[in-house]
Length: 93
Image 1 (cartoon, helix red, strand yellow):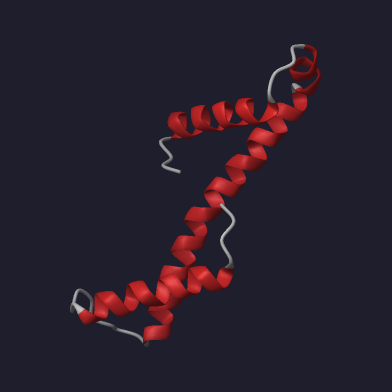
Image 2: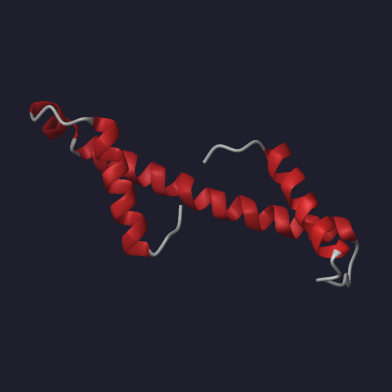
């Protein structure tokens, strides 16, 4: 999923602020370090989908000729393959 770095950083900051406000967490380090950790976790999760998309593109590139010969919709096949791989791997997209 394409999300700007600034948006992820903003969300990470909001999450940390909320957890701090409701006293759900105590900091053993500075707040910016916690925001960095949350930011990294969000970006890591988003990169899983990006890697999956790249894998699906590679799979379909190998089958491009077959897709063309059988007049198969690339976008629809992309989504079907992506959903199948995500389901097999237990990914939530």
